[in-house]
Length: 76
Image (cartoon, rainbow, N blue to C red; front, side):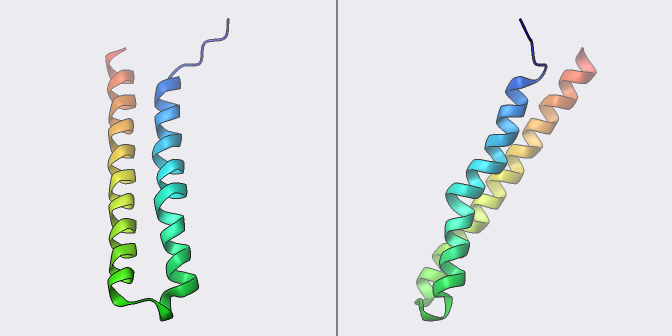
């Protein structure tokens, strides 16, 4: 049986980066890029707020994952 160390942390890392990028950041960025000049200001603000929240959530998730990995290496 093959045991992968830190499998949960690796999965969380991939989820924090990949899922927020694909689900929130890229669709809003493409919307702004393709229709940016023709969109009302409120939609531009909405897309920008979604991007900002997704980046904040992704970065905070990465920080928590790194803290977990570092604590795990220090304690073991």
